[in-house]
Image 1 (cartoon, rainbow, N blue to C red):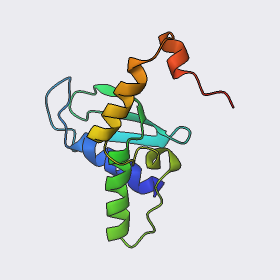
Image 2: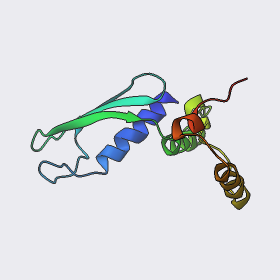
Image 3: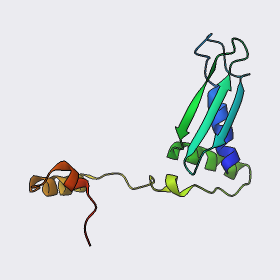
Length: 120
């Protein structure tokens, strides 16, 4: 699955144009590797002007979903990292907003205490 995620990222770079010369990055030299559970180190070099770019990127739920679809199509077992699963929540409803509004309307603390973990 990790290799599929890296292939998706490389394909995305190849769809872009070089910021240095404006040519397609379709033939660029691209290196990508995982750094930890949820970040990817990416480096590319344009073959036309030798512009180099890249950086470290967080693995997004969209990237995981696209990789899972590709992995499934290729017969692989789609293993979605736990980090990406955290974001697969139900949409926020009107009732959720009303509940938050009711809680905040009676709040008598500062912002940091609002975000502090609840004590047991």
